[in-house]
Length: 384
Image (cartoon, rainbow, N blue to C red):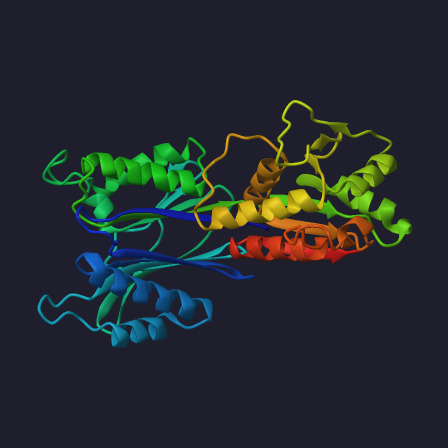
């Protein structure tokens, strides 16, 4: 079974605090995903530091194969119990899902994990045991495409307490609300934002506690194949055209020469889109059987810039429809991306008079690949 775990979270800081006392850490490996939601004692800077340390220690140790006992022991020794309140400095939820669909969850004093399967709330089987004097709940389960797991800090179930709701937003009510949202088929990012928006409304925009929702949605991977540049040997033209044709997911061709080769091999013609011309970006084209055909190095360089801005949170959703926005969107929506890179040298790219930002094709593609990997994408580079 091949799965992808779409992971996102949203958070509110306690009213009057700049930093959240909750922290989420997500680590992706070839084996799967480890996600940790930690809730530091109190609020503000101190709680933020405690939660961050807790989440980072747990995520790193679990990722590296440490047992839960060793992980809890390390956290306990690093963050001792508060002597005044006799409370742990941070509570936490750990979720680990492997590529084979094996799921594991562990909780310490956080609200119970919410699990939705086939659009219905489903109860996980939990076992309790004591580790380092702490009562830990563990669950082992299998996941399948469509499953949704939601971990929340206690700020979610306290939403509205003493105001809109006398007793706050009870766990059962939160779980039922999530069940309704899941049936609207949102992705992990949208679901986390919807839930936190509802909490903000219940708090009347003055949260009484740090409030966080961590969402994991299991789905089949979205694949994408990108042909960049003509192959060194013309005998590989047919091979690349066939590889693009057999791709079940998104298909993109970058470069005029590459597009001409595939169009010729398929016996079809490329139509240039003249309705969405952009003075800053070369026009894109359409070829039956392909999602997008773009110019090469300029479009790829600008797409790299867009991906890096998106990573830094600076790239606000653009209404402009051009080759860069379309290609960036396809990259961000895909999970497994394969580049078919032709190594034939284009003399135009060796011109010393060209601006430095028009880097060589190879370098730009490698930077795009690395940026996508940092976003949790699985990227493969094949050279021809």
